[in-house]
Image (cartoon, rainbow, N blue to C red; front, top):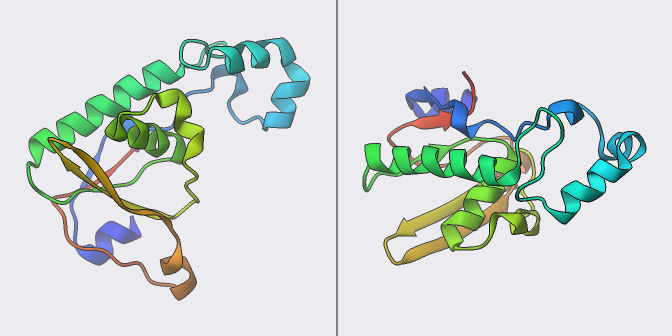
Length: 155
């Protein structure tokens, strides 16, 4: 919450911005999943939009809840700058949706932990102004402007 405090932003928690639920795979590395459930992992790769591990959610469900959160935020703060903080998977899927790309292409966006990206959203489409910038991590200070609020996935 250092970003919010530094810029005196109100924190608004939204559980729809939490990372994808991997169900039985939660907490496992990719290698552990390969060893434990190779067939289920292959099915997941073949149908990532619809398939999920036991007890988890699929990519379509993640995309729906993330999109709903973004629409609510935009509706509540029309024309305002918004600082949205979430896990990489959620942000990657939102980038896809904002650009009109299928969510199953989320892996084409690499987002480093703590990186900054800036997307301007218009009725006609979206413009990526900044993607995966980490220069602030090297300087030791963050940068950015004031917005209406600071959204995160906590609850």
